[in-house]
Length: 141
Image (cartoon, rainbow, N blue to C red; front, side):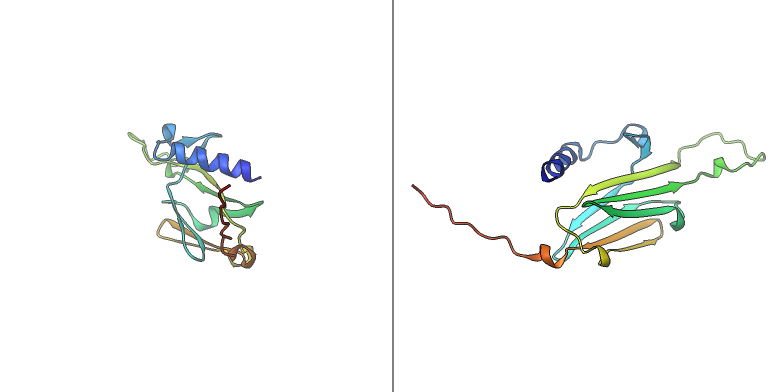
């Protein structure tokens, strides 16, 4: 599994900053803009989901992969015969992002909140993952 995570991380690093074509990523999902920050306690993920209703957001963690899904329904989707749209630029559809966590998470303490179109997820490390890295002495022959 670590090889897969390293390949995902390498691909993400390589493509960071490239716009997804037409706001879409593979599979036809919209790609929300996110920030991922590492802290002493774990990770903080912040995602922009403007216009999304909190009940249409789903966050789950499976096998060390955090998945964020959301549905943004457009005003245009509603049957309103009185409106004729001349320009439609606002995105609507299904959002999805997946992140491989670089540590084992304390799943019982993951917290998610949504305010003013911004989803914030705090993912703490599990107690077993908080061990400091062991320093290994390198000897010369």
